[in-house]
Amino acid sequence: MTVRDSMNFAGVSRTSLAHGCKSQGVLRALNLAVVFTALVSTPCLPEDTNSAGTNLVASVSMDHNPFPPSEITVAPGTTVTWVNNETMPHTVVAPSQGFRSKTLVKDAKFSFTFTTPGDYDYLCSIHPNMKGKVIVKPGAG
Image (cartoon, rainbow, N blue to C red; front, side, top):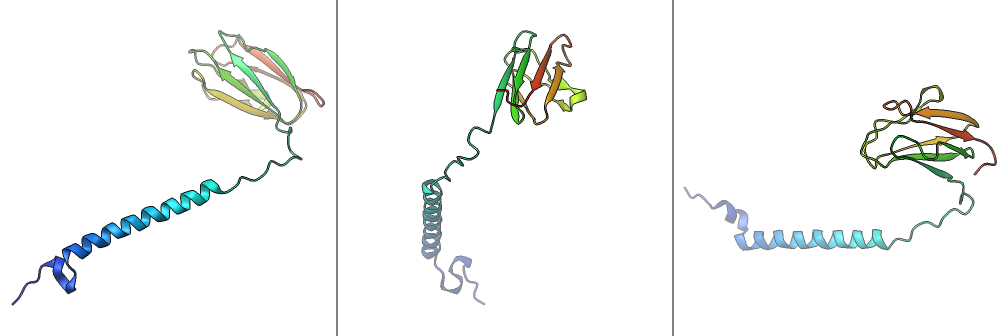
């Protein structure tokens, strides 16, 4: 009874197996390079000029207990972003108006898009003396 070396089974030598693995690795690398090049060189879609300027944004800071500015007036559709600029954690809560942030640590942000005109009072639930207001009014901004 003859036992064949598993690497030489069916006429496959060790050198052809190693060469085949290297070739497959090179082919995979080349395929990835071609796909990556195609993705990187694909032009981006042009900006939709009809919607340019419709993404309204406003920013409110959290610094040493106030919300500067403590009152802002924005147009409907404006996204307001609150940014915690200090090491003390804060929140942005307006339970009756339907928005509430998680606890915001330093440099954390919370955003809310105001679509309906009205007055939106909010406060920090950790520091209830921190209060602010967003006034949403058509034509504002």
